[in-house]
Length: 555
Image (cartoon, rainbow, N blue to C red; front, side):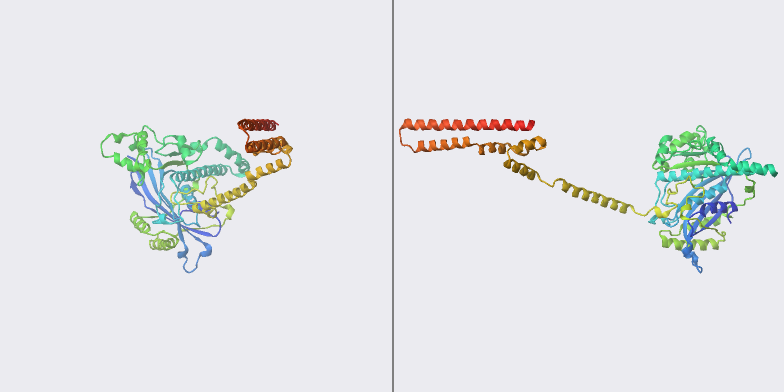
């Protein structure tokens, strides 16, 4: 049975979700066994598994309601207790797997369950190896169309937000415990006065605590991406601006220390697998420093080809005396029983919603047959607008761990698929092109030929209209060609007509004459003279027309 502390945290974080949902939290862990987490130090290990089912309360059937439940998410962790040389105990939490089934109506759940769990086991040091994979806990869930796997960058960003929220909650809890401890030491009238003063200065003390970097002294966090050495590039890759009073880039180990002596060896971790390759070979890699080990880790197959995040977060526990009375988080079973249940669960099918419901029913039946304990039940009672409450102000629930999308408001996430968004964009472009085409038709209402014909008509009606038109609208100077300008004065010149008629008459009379050679020669000379005069007159007319056109242009 989950402890009261874990139940309180779950109730605090899940209950504010929109009403109409019931969550069942199944929690089990193994008995303690010896482990070699650190070299030459005694440690114990407990495997921990948390599975969450959900159902809409309107769909509950009183006779057989198991068929309506669906598994939503799961978390698998390893809890270590290490005895140091000075006799102190240190709890180390390694979060190995976080996964969801991709149920669209239950989003924004796994990050809340994860925070509640971390908060219930603190003080501890949390280790996370963030690596994006299609599925971890739910078999064939990668085929579920509603399940979307986060990219490497988004996964690291999601873990950063979740762990930052845990740090903030840890700080607030320590402030509350410290305040309760002070009040408990001052009874009577003075204690009441002290309580009033403490409550009135609550907001001021909180701001002063933030500005004095108390988080740095009480809980420190590290992030490292082995394939990236530059701190600025790391924060740029995940798109976050960290609180430098809390976060460090790198690792919390001495860079010059021997890696095999200080690094922890988790069962399913890239660091542990690389350490095993060094041990037992008797080469120089056995004495490799932490700095060199981290550089080699960045070129391994697991960390070199993808962005992977290594998180280490130290959470100080509160001074509350109530936590000493807290029992185990969940029921403890033997390692063999845990393995039997694990193998059974890994063979279930979560390919779609139908298979999810069937597999959930099988899971509950197996859980009850092995007598692993009753689940913790949480019924949501919040409104649609209160989803963002419950100390989740520092988390963007639109991010999700690998293999999932965990937004707190599923109605606003995947309304349109990518293809539909593109289709709407294309239609918008077509509408814009259609509107621009219709507008362009109004620009060229009159063709170029129509504009020219208007100018010609006005010129034939009035000779002086050309000069006035050119003066008022210079852009229409070259509307009429030069040939048209030449023909106008020729057509209106009486002298030219007379000369032409005279020349034709003389030419006709001279050619029809039968006189002698002299007469013919004289007539020919007269004809040539008339032609020269005609050409001269035409040249004069052309020159006059050209001058007039130039003047019109100048005007």
